[in-house]
Image (spheres, rainbow, N blue to C red):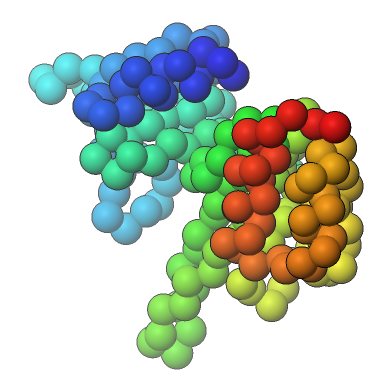
Length: 181
């Protein structure tokens, strides 16, 4: 993971890249379709062939124009990895999945956040959808357990009892930047 962070820091300003499941970092140009039906493709040379970005072969990719990092993650209850947007990385990593749903000629955007800590399996944490595999109470309880080894963050969370997207991200940032007590 440290190599990934180092690579992100070095290349973040100017160059797209993919990192293969073997750990090779490949500078490239990434193209994502406007109407996303998959994760797009990359080219290592302007005249070279396009290579499809597949989570079985690529563990993460970075798009410099958008300053966004995507990582192949296995969601709880699934067996195959999918790419999720990396919001935070550290002892606790936070990921986002945005889905557009079309109902009665109206587009609704649904946001779901997933979390990992010491595991490659991402658990559902927060959503603005009315349906999720676990209740809000269960997800809040799991989040409390995740941060319980950092007394300052744990106390702040349990005192405030706020479970908004903004507050969760802030708590994860604080958790990742402080030492556990």
